[in-house]
Length: 213
Image (cartoon, rainbow, N blue to C red; front, side, top):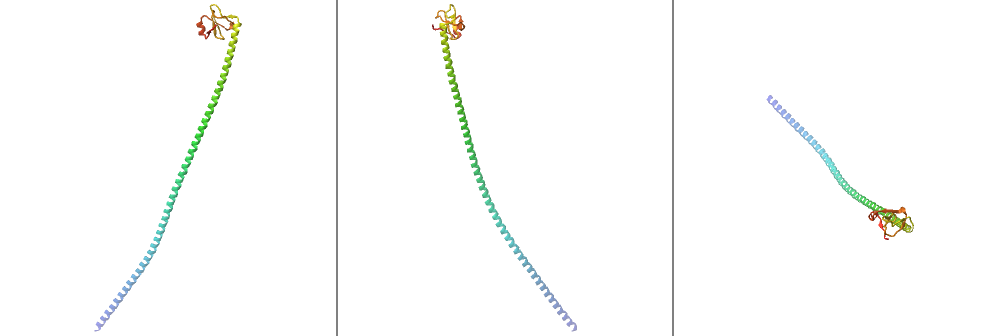
């Protein structure tokens, strides 16, 4: 009987201890789960904040990229317009230079032609003047020759120491270039002007002509 009571007490104590242990374990497990839940919730909130921050940064970067793209496009358009304007200005400058060069060449050609015409006119005037002078000199010389010839002829007709009609001889006058035969009219001429030929052919070959008298 006494041993039975001890056994009952022992079993009761064991049950109490077992129950306490189980309760403690359940409480510990519950505390661990609660701690883990809090930690997960904290991590989730941090991740959400980081994600929101990253999303905001991404949006900002996208907006910056869009603005940069817009600026790049505007810059490309401005560059294209500036290039086109530069080409237009260059084309106008080239046209102006070509026109100026053409005008300069035309002016130079006109000046050259004018100078050539002026030089030609001066040369023609000089030639004309020389021709007039030569004509005047020739006329004066011809007049002088005619006068001299007439004078010589008169002198030969009326004065001199040589007869033109000589037997067996042909007498030429070196001034008048006229030769006389013995059967022709006799003239008196200066002996220094007399040229003698044996035949008329020789006289003609020397450039003399026969007297008409």
